[in-house]
Length: 293
Image (spheres, rainbow, N blue to C red):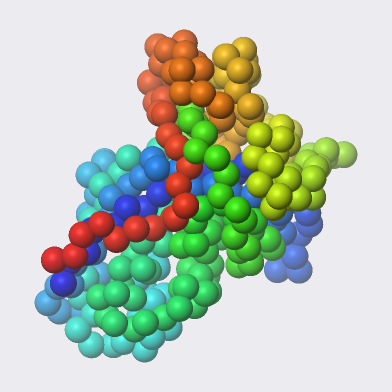
């Protein structure tokens, strides 16, 4: 059996750190949104018992360090499948790396969904999330997708009403950001200003999307600077963005617009200075099986 899946990216409409757990992990309050900028994941059952990985982009690891490999390992550990567990995973990458868009997490989520189908384990979504969070904090959200609140280390995901189909401009500065270094930097921030978490949550719960976008915020922007971020936000804002904000621990900056022509105008002004500029739209799911062979 061979499955092809769409693994959507995500942005953080709001990202706050509310504390640190005893085990050293950060406690998060974040509202995330799936976008149609996606990787394509192919998972195929093979002879033998090996997990193998390939990718269309140089520099992406294809060994045991890749998140898709780790997700496959965790799946087989949880289900107790020991025989005939050979699979090949191919990643056709379109989501920028080291960008805060959950590219790797979305790929891992797609692998869990695929294996659940291929091996007919019929695990409910919440169990797949429980397996996935052991590998990466964003994987449960990437399985659930849409618009959702995620709490603690990402294990708690609460779906929210879908936001409007806004045009979303994605801009990746030249430099990527190491997640580990980003969290170290945010830990050193004194007198951190926290977003208005509950205000945005209540507005989204009431489907007041336009008003909610005014509260997009990310505490990581207080921790470090990225070359080009200020200029990107300036262009997005002057072209009428409802929100201009960094996603995740960086480095991508997004702009949410009311109208396509406003978004396109911003893209035209940014694309010469920033080669990775994308026009996206919100979607209601994280992972979608597009083909079964």
